Image (cartoon, rainbow, N blue to C red; front, side, top):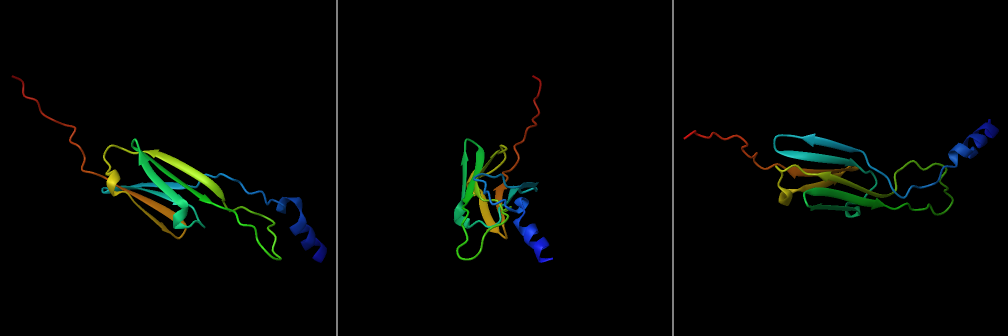
Length: 129
């Protein structure tokens, strides 16, 4: 039995300690009457790891999580957690207030809230003279 366990943990499929330097986090897009929300699945980050900016009506969210080698008697046999740098960009609709965008990070989810402005009236009546 000990030999079987030894082979299991030393098998080449478990020698997968390559760490990617880039990744793409999963994103959920949500719309309500008052705002759009973008939720990024980025566990293990710190709040200071993120950069959020709007330029030319494009929202860009980027961040980086660095891989730290274990010290002492521990050795990674398998690494499936996302490390490295990411960047995602989204073209914003016209009916948003970019000055009021907020971001919150909680339980591994970065939430970017983009408030809507009042909808522009696209309908008008024209009298014939």
